[in-house]
Length: 212
Image (cartoon, rainbow, N blue to C red; front, side, top):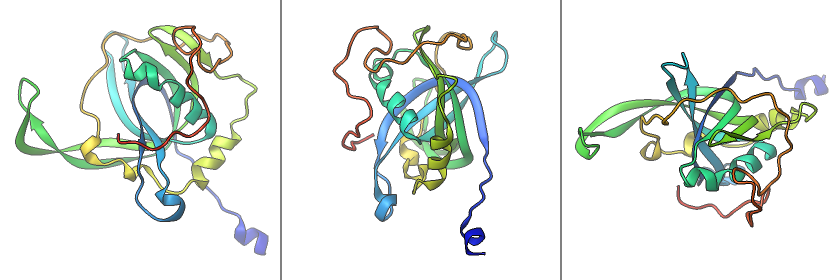
């Protein structure tokens, strides 16, 4: 009876797609204990609709699972260089979030008026493939287990609520069309993402939390 009482059941809500990776940053969470630990966050502009008239859905995400964290951190330089980083992803536990933002004029300058806006939050738990400027640089091995990311998404304390509305992404669409990554199998080499050259960046160790 005690063992049955200790068992927990979870209802998974997963969203799969491809989209452009943006705004990789560490977020200072609010709370106590484990809930106060900073976490890695990012945004994805997911593609939908016809390839002739692509539409975008914007997700603001907490990165969950060691594999996903290492991959996203490894792509930070490419994202900061405004390169087109296209990922095939899986998101868990999405929910809507509303906030206020400044209205911008025709030239993109902020005004004194405010408006209601919304975005979708969730957890980025899996990256299946990565393209940088159209070049396939990573595909997840088919034999690689996924249980760790599934388990961690439920066990992690905190949520994406630490991402404040003031830093929510604006409605900006990436340029150009994107195609679904080809089914090539290519091992991921840390430090060689995007340009094929070694890098001094370290993968898998936590960097100090910074402003985002």
